Image 1 (cartoon, rainbow, N blue to C red):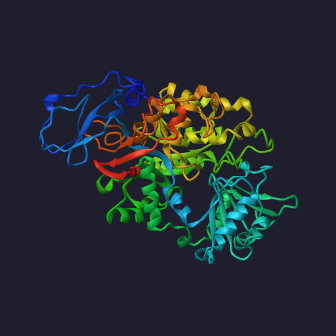
Image 2 (cartoon, rainbow, N blue to C red):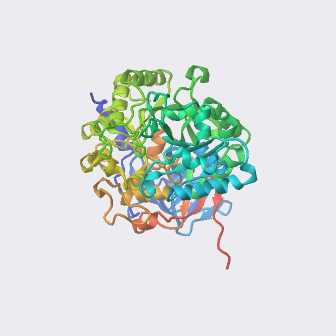
Image 3 (cartoon, one colour):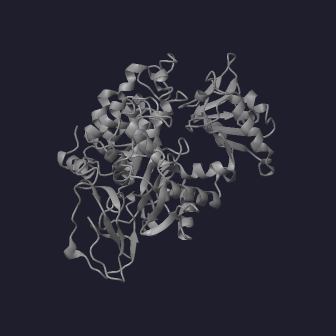
Length: 569
């Protein structure tokens, strides 16, 4: 089955990353007859503006923003302006649309300010030392001890940690620490006892309790098994403070994000965010996905562009499998480094299809978490059964990391959006081939293959799984290299994106994935003036320098929400 060609052609052209002029040699002239010198617009002049548009990738030098916060005009150079017209001289700096992270966890990122941070810990001993230091703080001496970020793949020996190790630093209070990918957790004996987990506890469907040679729980819980403990954690212990949320958003603005797709939250969390926006809001456009299992009938109709376009909820996140690092990703063939395992499908085919149908029929978009090739096939099958020829919901697969080559064309045929995270490739390359073997890497992190067939890729970071800085993702997408520039020639560099494609993935394609391409994602007349002023020209500098880009200014709806302080002389 193929989605009608007219629909797909329109989408492909709307997001085509083909460069009319990647370096600004052919610029749009604008329409001087439509411009008004005293219409209240503010002009931004002498810039180097790069943007995807519905007609391709373009560059120009000046644009105007009306009092309503939307772009009114774009020009190669500014027209003659009267003295009453407010002007911002960009002094040759590079300007791009505000970047949109199409898959992230804002609330989890904010919650890290209140939890043990184990991201980057290079060993079990370092992890335990960080936990001990956290416990020494007087503010952290009561209740549950929560944290996130451990990654045994970085440790000598790569062995999973144990409850006994945690008991050495805290034996009395329950400790629960999520793995970097959020698909496994490390608990101490107190937490296991509170959850009633022992040698007789069966593995839940879609989850696994890691056990020792005698069948006893070791302290690591994978995917659905995590719920055995999380159901006992008080809501108050897991909710980030408003201050933590605001501080996190301010940092995201500094890094260049003007929009974030929050991948999964409860109805209660969504309503708290709605209240926060009603009280004055946040300088960030949030696109919310309800978590699987939330009652759509109780929630009601989707929220569209609430609070002057700052808050939308019209999607639901479902799960097909777990993560590659914890071997929870569902594979068509066994793991190369664990031949008796094919990972974990969270539910049977008919159950996932029923869940997709419920979401679709309620008028919501579905975003299905799928890492392994078996999970991606199951997700594609479910979407195909439910949507038929109607791709108007713009259903998404979140991550789409490992694909069977035979399933690649189905993204284009079904009009399914691939919501992918470029830094996952450069973070996973140290273990992906161990898990899959060289043969199956062919369909993994396959950006070029998907783009060449016309599939829309919406880029994100999955923070706090990865760092939130979007320029790290742009660098990974373009170079297929890590922060140290390795591997020298790029990891399977044949699947890399061009610079215009990468920028499009973080702007117009991400906006399209949220049904918002008419309002954000590019710097064109009629759209919100969400843009960044950068310290370097990311279309020209060496690829390695893109990662180090600093944002000089961040603007949302024509209002500056961040400005870097100038160095003192």
